[in-house]
Image 1 (cartoon, rainbow, N blue to C red):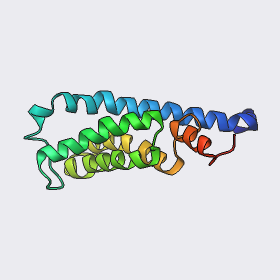
Image 2 (image 1 turned 120 degrees about the horizontal axis):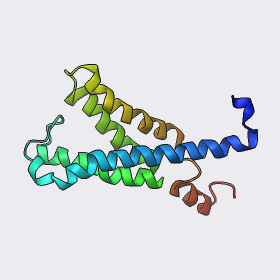
Image 3 (image 1 turned 135 degrees about the horizontal axis):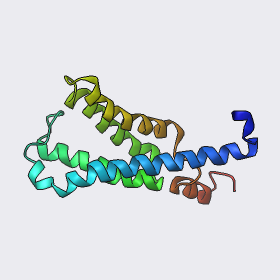
Length: 143
């Protein structure tokens, strides 16, 4: 199949793929997980899991920061490799600590989020991102 795509289009398609993945995974985390936690912060803060021993409100704050703040930055492609770290950490904690004793089906969901975050740590956001625009303006990339 690769030979059917002209070589000059492959970088564009790779960048489009990274954009779609950033928007999808960032939006899904933001809407399905981050915003519900943010909007119910008061009710959840006393009983939120505290796997690091920091307190339930602090753990919830860290989770909301990753799931809301980092997800928005990921979608924008701003500080992509950096914001992927707390997102990946949050999902690994969910999979292996919070759901550590649960069956695979409970861990799988968090790991399905974790893999794209790891991917963005390795690849960066692609050309259609604020990271790329900033690097281009600084002269770090060719025009």
